[in-house]
Amino acid sequence: MKIISKLAGCGSYLPQNTVTNDELAKKVDTTDEWIVARTGISQRHFAADDEYTSDLALKAAERALEHAGIDGADIDLIVVGTTTPDRTFPAVAVRIQKEIGCRTGAAFDVQAVCSGFIFAMSVVDSMIKTGQAKNALVIGAETISRIIDWEDRTTCVLFGDGAGAIVIQAEEVDDQMEGEGVLSTHIHSDGKLEELLYCSGGVSTTQTSGYLTMAGKEVFKHAVTNLAAVVGEALEANNLQDSDLDWLVPHQANMRIITSTAKKLKMPMDKVILTVQQHANTSAASIPLALDHGVKTGLIKRGDLILMEAMGGGLTWGAALARW
Ligand code: UT7
Image 1 (cartoon, protein in one colour):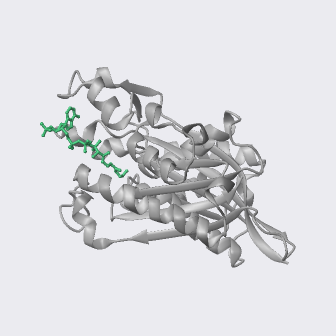
Image 2: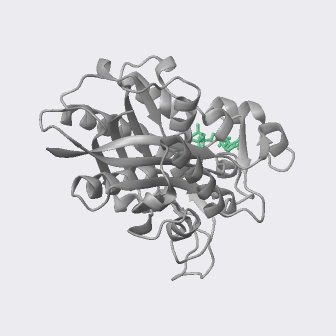
């Protein structure tokens, strides 16, 4: 017998306040035409002043638990991908642990910016397969609006807030069974490229949270190259072809980057889950938000093979291949 990481359920949450491109253009020197043409984004959600990353994460987690039909008390591992925690410490994950009534196991955050959900999933998959957890919550949650520099039009139009979660359960299966649950995860970083995308503050430097800073064009080029490489790596590791995939569930940063990855995989755009128009870039929350959208609208069905991929500050990038 062997253990697989089964995707048991998903959930997501978006703050109520939506802001369209035209509304943004009233306070920033930009236009709806520019934002749509360069990114595909039409609107984004922003958290209320008294709504924190853990509040968004909790709502997504509760919905995922309900979808999976599992009680919070049975969860024994919570890993949250976030760059915008409520506090410097403790982790967002421990608040989730308290609120869902989970009293055992471990809860912690991982920090890989927009790739945070893939990195969190990689950790959870490894811990499940090595017998360290049975019922895990993997969450991506962000209030990126808190670190937006409203004086920088090249970045402030790109982001939004939100959260998404998946319940991943250990399942014992026959040794011969292949291709179920999480097939593989692939994560990478290149610290030499730190200056391309970073936040200008921090505990040890300025004692402030700082503002998001990005060399957009450079990041764009690395995204196209690295994502093409990592999706190829995921398929090769599993002896699969492009044509075996049912869905691409990409990080929703920019429609042009998504289109480029889909083209590399020879996937028609109706096999790509797209939420970038409505959600903008929600960093670590974007993949689980897109996955939940795909599942709850009936596009992604049980048994479908899905490829998730992301790239973010660090630089970091990664992919996860799984059967829903
Ligand atoms: O999730 C983490 C990873 N992040 C990403 O993957 C984002 C990667 N980068 C991108 O998505 C794109 O590079 C951007 C959407 C950020 C920018 O698109 P671009 O095609 O690379 O535009 P650009 O930076 O070359 O700017 C083109 C022009 C400039 O004007 P000039 O110098 O040509 O006269 C900018 O000043 O567009 C101008 N511009 C704007 N105009 C209206 C920049 N921002 C805006 C704006 N509204 N908001």
